[in-house]
Length: 465
Ligand SMILES: *Cc1c(COP(=O)(O)O)cnc(C)c1O
Image 1: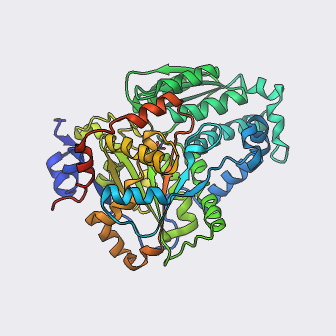
Image 2: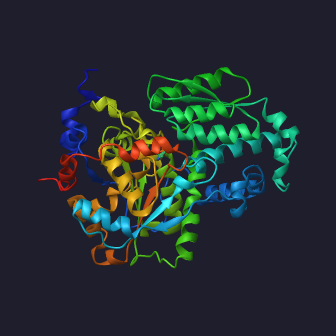
Image 3: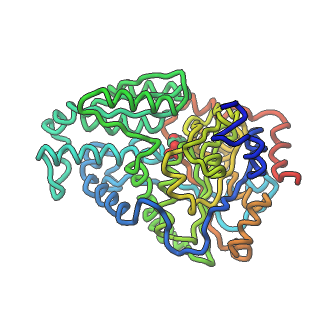
């Protein structure tokens, strides 16, 4: 197949069918709304999973809560439930409005998964959940545990001994490896993490200190995952956590839906047709934003609107949804290099099932330039005193672009929401950062902050049509 063809169709033909694709290929920032999105239904429409699957995951996390509280004392105050704060960020909202020269109707909140206990990123939801599920399965099968037990017995030497005869293998750009490595090694598993070239040194160092084997690859995420898959197949008693396809990871993330509802209730924030909820989620392979979207949709149905954010150089989910090829397409096939400082989002090929499962539920995807990530990182630090890693600020342009971009305004019109936006709640999902070492955070804070060029580009977001 010639290099100008993708899945048997010329790139020119793909562009004709998707006018925004030209901009995507040129790695310009875009705001895309999903034509497959379904507004009319008040039930979540998916192919494979149901609300019962999320409830099963919730119950499992509750069974494990006493164990988590025991082995991670920082979770004692939440009784072993791994959850993060939802905070109003009024100062940042004003700064965003100035930076982009665009008013944002409604109020702005930050969901601080950056500060989730244990591993300091959104992966503390899915990654830890899947490790717990594996451990539970083994312990029950070996008759060391029944579901009604006090799960703190899993911290016993007998259980750790059992788990040490099993290995868990995963491919990662960093944070998934961190979550699975920390949780797996505390339980007693042998953990092997295949890290892509994007993975930051401090994440590898931290894992090695915890006794995790880290295999470094010169290649990108997809190949690190592939290497993990092959290794797991060759080893006895080995579990492979498949970030590209795992329903367990997805369900671990989905638990966030009801948890967010509880937090909104506590803050007396109403969500209904007259009070829409907008959520902006950084996206790599799609598992985390997808799972969270699934959870939110089961709770709020069409009163929640979920937009994914990707780096301009790694628009994996955007291309998968836009072409409807899902995991049959990669950014590289469209000539996009998948090179970004946003290591958590450095994924060229999207998940094999998230896009297909949620095709009708994802409202849209927008992209963001790396330099702008640093700018937003510093703005948030200055305005709110919250420090995130670059990937984790990718959601911030969402609430602005929803109003500034023609596709965003059209989305609001078609959803009959224009007059209701003053009642809207915008939640930017902060996906990581609290474990970044101080000197590295200071480097992030000081990066790319100079130059008038960037300031001008910030004001240059409405495409000239
Ligand atoms: C992994 C990650 C994401 C995205 O999750 P995916 O499941 O890969 O889509 C977003 N932000 C950070 C910081 C991450 O580590």
